[in-house]
Image 1: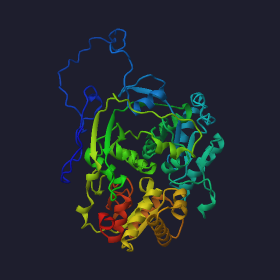
Image 2 (image 1 turned 180 degrees about the horizontal axis):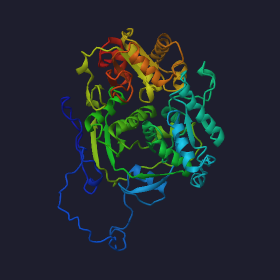
Image 3 (image 1 turned 90 degrees about the horizontal axis):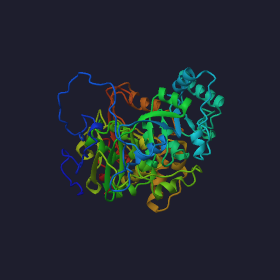
Image 4 (image 1 turned 180 degrees about the vertical axis):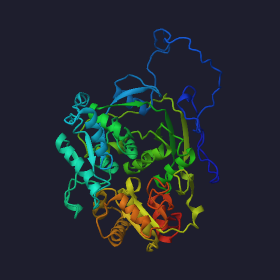
Length: 525
């Protein structure tokens, strides 16, 4: 299938959309990939209340009766103990890992106790035990991370954390990443940080498994070749009591990205391009599978960024096939056995979308939607008040090294207040101690350390929402901010009239240096 060619910004970069017959029923009518249907007049008269008798299904005449499946279908088939699944089927799935945090955890616990009893115990899962997973009950496979309400004096927020702590002690939950001393986060070895990044760093993301979390960006873990998606408190309470959840099998959209990544692009540009093309509803309750030579060249943190924002397109989950990069990342992080799965060559995708990556340019998502995309160079006259580099999307080690590269290349100081907020304690430690090899990387690393000390002076794993509100509401007035976060809806970062431009760390750093939305090629070429 031919690759797309570069066209003006007002045109689409997606080429060769190939809708497959037979799957149109699972496509939203608002989706650009839906297939028009012929409407027939159907009588409302009830003819029968019995299902017609069906003849026995026989193997295909070509030999094997096995039907090809996508990665997501295979993972859910394994988790539901079924030989084959098709999009649209409702299935009971055995859950490998449940994650919740200090925002949704108390609500999930309350539902669990209400429905299963005050003295109920988190289910011992025979299925997990039979898979030879060392964590042989769901209680040990639940992960409570304190990522949002840590450094705050709000009594209600602190009460949420107390509820989590009490429940983990009561249920003997092994993986509770707590903090005991609020005055100095460095003396809390158990504390990690933002849950989606911490899950990966602590080895809880494993190939072929089902990971559910009470946060919409749980889909980040799909970078590890697993099914990962966000759920609500009610579903989480049910998983605590049963180890299962009822899910509908999503159809899959495949995104093929080929070519060498230009040195002025980051993965944030790629996912913004995709969302800009298909819209914030273009993948509603669909799986988004990412393949191609560009994807294969990405490290794990970059793949996490790619999967992190599938929910901004309405996606149920995002997934990247595992390879040597995945295996290498997990080598020293988990001893739990895992088994990768891959889409069959004959698997049926709802659509296949191809991108010629070398022809793309740095992007921003203008207010107030992640799909309101424009070329960064087209917004060069937008004056900004703040820059924010952080979050589960743009607060990983690679993101800060990218920002440092721009700062170093410019040799200038930032012109607007710039907030650097590493996602986890490990990222914070990396910024200060990560060994680097070549001279340019070493200089960039040293510059970033100096910048972090100069700009923040305090522990940088801080209360996310307080940091954002301080960022946007310090003067109690709307401001314009370039941010590496994932959403720019009204009120998302403070004042409801604030103007948020989503961008890559390259673009955010370049904008910090000029005080305007800036294409990073001004400093990188």
